[in-house]
Image (cartoon, rainbow, N blue to C red):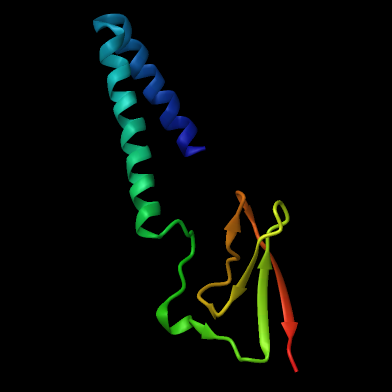
Length: 106
């Protein structure tokens, strides 16, 4: 709701400025805000290595030798063997989350 009110206020100010002084003065700040938002989101994803939730170092869990956790991609069939669990988020492949398959080796 708050974003909608801000959008309405910005559109009103841009319309007034555009009709009085020219549309380049109204559209340039909006384009600058869009570029700034995109750039900060890109840099933020670089800092997080593309992950939304990064596990802390103390939360890293080393899997036991009798447990074998694999992830497989439904699209292409690629399989990934998990040696150290860094977070609860499954890896991504072919733009989708991979499916977890746990095997117990005796």
